[in-house]
Length: 325
Image (cartoon, rainbow, N blue to C red; front, side, top):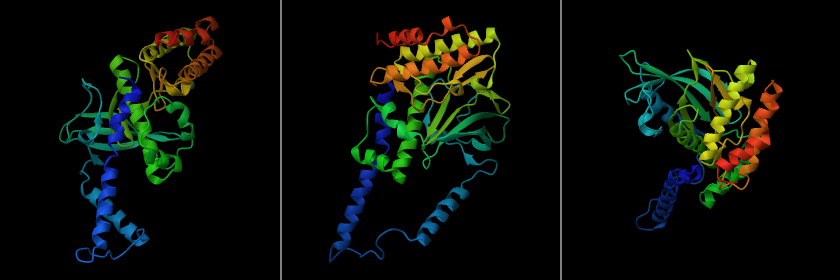
């Protein structure tokens, strides 16, 4: 299944807005009836005092349901779940609890936290990376248009909300990118690509396989200075990963040495919210060529033989695998 075809499920999550609008109209008509309606006691927006009361009620409700030995109950049952078979290390019991262990990385549109999922009363636990997209600060999301060409767009009212950057629109933007990344990781994991296992998606939060050891994240490729033999080995791993992605018509869209991790000699591709459909997106070949040039320049600058990383040849080979040559 193409990545852009998976957005139909995402659109349905917001259909309830139409039902809410209908209920509001029905209530207004009832209040206008001289015989049956009850006049509202207040019109217009909530006062600050009312907002504070609602916020406190929500906080109290959440606090009342916090498990005694964790920050929250497992959200596995309410989330979109990763592909089967689930890895043996993953805890899927609904009685598990999640604990926040600290922040791993801050980013432009999302932050990554370390989360431990524990089964109370046992010694079973697993550590995951929680990537949380922020809805109030999308400094680079003005680049949406190019990446989203070829993807299915949702209804015009939602597009207007996103264009106007209303609170609803900003949340839609954040959730759309979370959905895109989860869909891409699911597809690539099932193909055997070197990506983190996508555990689940709940709104704008992704839980992913933690790439690292003992709570310490594996380094980004950009942080390393590999020896010549290791450098060539990592390059060949990268070309294999890009080839696998191209074979299903996908390109990373924002590939660099900062979006690659190296764990125990294994290259891992990360950060895929802007994944590009090379076939449906008319700018797909352009994005692919830019990806290849970015990483090829990094490798050759550190000593890889230029003939092994000739950007034009690699790009043409990938486009051929995608059926575009």
